[in-house]
Length: 215
Image (cartoon, rainbow, N blue to C red; front, side, top):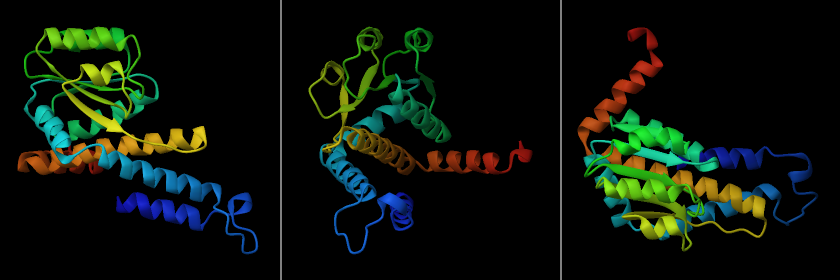
């Protein structure tokens, strides 16, 4: 988005020391490589997630009476932020990063509810029991994984995919996280646009956050 792009450009423009080109050096700097990898990952991720997939995920979330968002490790950080953002839209969401703590809300899911799972590789053995329990309850499973064949993606009702590639593994890791967050923000934006009531709820919560004395 615009804010992200401006921030990246400012960081690149103001970056000195070892990262700055020396005397007309045209070789890309590490910041340039990171920037291009992040941009490419976002573009690739948009391409592998057609609008109908994002709409299907948003529709399932919008109609659910209960939503459980789950992620382990770094994926759990994205889960927390995504859960916070859709809660600001008034969606009935619970976020968990621990399998044992996820069991109570998981067992409370029913037909039409959603288990939303974020997992880069989609192969963690602790995920499969969660999926089976959700399916037994009649809940739908939405997965967010890397654009590879993996067990979680194969078992999901709706799959969202993240694509990121780079020559350096640490660059690819950062590009992947940027692309995943971009995909989740795209889904939040779709939910925000779907109903006027969602936008009004968001405005009310933002007002309270900015003016806590009004509570």
